[in-house]
Structure formats: C-alpha cells, structure tokens
View (cartoon, helix red, strand yellow):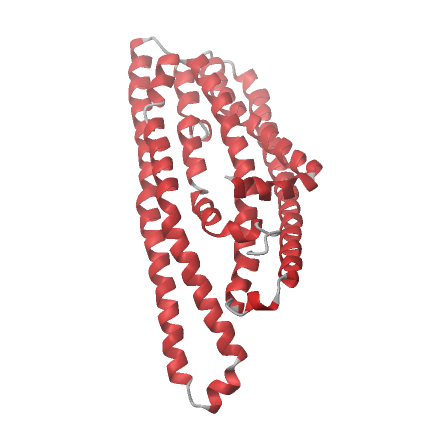
Length: 320
C-alpha cells in the first residue's frame, strides 16, 4: 500500500485534469438511469394506456440521454489519455534521472534489458492501475448507489433477490487479487530475463558471429522465451476460469430476477414496466452485482503493480 501512495503523488500534479476526467465519468454514469425509466414509461403510459402522443417526447428524451452519455465518454477518454501520458512522462523522467545518479558499481549486476523492461513496462502498469483503476472504481461505486436506489424504488424484494450473486462476485474478486501476485511476479521476471538476454545478444552480435555461437545463443533465447510463455499461460489459464465464471454468476442472477419478476407481474403485485426497467440490459449490466464484474475486468492490471511497481516508486532510493 505504501508503494501505491508514493506513486499517487504524481497524480496530484494535474488536479484539474483528474477532476475533469472524474466529472465526465460521473455525469455520464448518471445518464444510465434515463433509458430504463423511459422504457418503463413507454410500456405503462404509452402502450398499456394507449397514449401514442407521449411516445415521441419519451423517445427524444432517451436519444438526448444517449447523446449526452456518449459525448461525455468521448471527452473523458480524451482527458484521461492526456492525463495518462503526462503521468507516464513524469514517471519515466524521474526514473531515468535517478538511474543516472546511481554509482557505476550498481550497474555491474544489472542487465540492461531488465532496466529497459522496468522503465517501459512497469511504469505503464503503475500508471494504468492508478488512473484507470481510480476512475473505474469511482464509476462503479456511483453505479452501485444510483442503480440500487432506483431498483429499491421499483421493487425492494426484487432488488434483494437480484443481489444474491453479489457476495459470490465479491468473494471471487478477493480470491483473484490475493492469489495473483505470485503468478504475475513470475511472469514479470520471465519477461525481464528474456528482454535482458535479447538486448545483450544484440549488443554483442559481432562477438557472437565471430565465435560462431549463433546456435547456442538461439537455444538460450528459446529457453528464456519458453519460460515467459509458460508463466503467461499460468496467468491466462486462471483468468480464463475466473472471468467467465464471474459473468456466469451475474447472468444466473438475471435469470432469477426475470423468473421471480415475471411471476410477480402475473400475480398483479408488480407492473410490467417496472419489470422491464429492472431487467433492461443497459440498466441491469450496471447494477451492483455487475459493478463488481466491472472491477473484475481490470484485475489483470492490478497484480502487476504489486509485482513491478516497487522499482518505479523507489525513485529516490539508492538501492533502486
């Protein structure tokens, strides 16, 4: 956690860009409730009440909401990318400045390829989690508050039923985060070793050719590349089981919600428009349970920070 807070200081250099990015994300998230509400009104007030005169204004309202939502998303992406590149530039600049101040003996036991991997890849990993992670976390939290509020307003019983998958999703996210560090650490080490070998071989290609060591060096490179392949496959196999499982649990929640909601409509205890609004894909995919899935979708970027960001944050440490 100390590592994350040290890097977080870089975000404070651009407060207005951070505020603009979060503002666009929040405002666009608020638009998420418009379409389900419009759908409910069309079903109950237009179709069932036979009021075609209300259809056009409601369609216009939905279209304007989509326009505002995606327009804000476009602005957010522009601000966020500019913000990211500024932070990356500062991280790399400080890191390179620190490297130049280290004594020569420090470089004796460090491979050039390893340093290049850390400057290029590790800085990107740290930046991606801090900026994208904070933004998506705020959006997800806001979605929980807004969507749960609306769903409790429509039907508190149906909302509680729809929350059944949430503990399983939260538990899955916690398990993946706590167990992923070792897998990603091995992957980063394998990537660093391969890059170091490649750089050293290219730098000494004249000597390799002069002594006819091409086959030997090729075998060494294949061994390093194979280690990276194996480490990456371990990460991806776990992700291939984890990610679809989380969405399966969320999908089963949708099935349960539709089944119980349909019975409530048939019994006359719930309006059809309320059921359609609650089960609307645009709405339900942003409800609390799937907000956890949204957080889960960026999990591949989180563990590499634990595995690689110590270098990028210890910029003022002589031990690097």
